[in-house]
Length: 337
Image 1 (cartoon, one colour):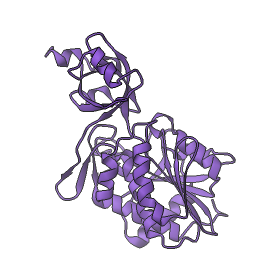
Image 2 (cartoon, rainbow, N blue to C red):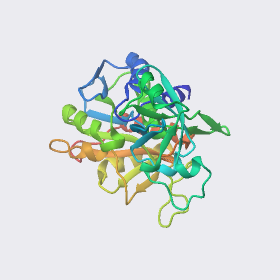
Image 3 (tube, rainbow, N blue to C red):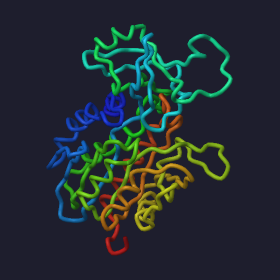
Image 4 (cartoon, rainbow, N blue to C red):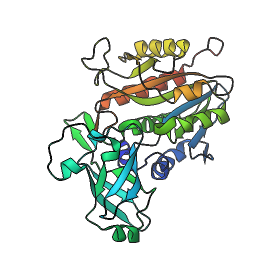
């Protein structure tokens, strides 16, 4: 899984996905017929075929932060980008993508910095970065309002089969799409592998790409949270890929899900049905594009989702790849969608 590690190590906070895009383009280009970047920044890889027009989507961007102010003492005050809980980033090392060079720092709050008892959970506006530099020094290096801030988090394998680190959401999906392109020697369909931007802040990349492509059906490959021990819902790592039934805003196409279930049974792949009350994915943007698109989501359960260090299980990723590959080889009937 060296490719997944390479993708995770790249920095690509929403709105600045270019580093991730370069890596994906390098690895997928030999296996597709066309490769281009659209106006919003999505990377679209097309494999020609005469059958269905299929869209596979995974987002390149990750959660992060952005500079909103530098005070006279050199503290860098930040705003979060994406669903990032303030409590999980305190004490984390970061780098700031300044114009002239990378600036490293540590996220803190007034209480943590000065060893004061914390009486309530911090809010995003309480977070700042300590770099050891004065405001004038930072400005000379090119740190300014709007500079992007990324978490520094090395990849660590936990045992032999669990990978941990940043940006598993959704570099796992990007990895799976690249693997699928490599496995498809010839395609009976016209398949679009779409690596989208700005999912974490509004599902925007999927919306514009689906409008342009007009697929017959689509699969979003993303990650989902684990529900271990939560009342009435269970999603675990080590229990196979997930298939979305519904989330807060989206109801999956019944026929696509039935076809995935059929393939899973034939291939003896365990699956987990994902029903959520909160959150959604790019599938909702694709579903309501133009006249509508049949869509569902194949996912991989991740512990510590939307934190600096997620945890995923290697075989879950492999089985999700196999499941989507099976659907491409044995597609649904368009008349039933």
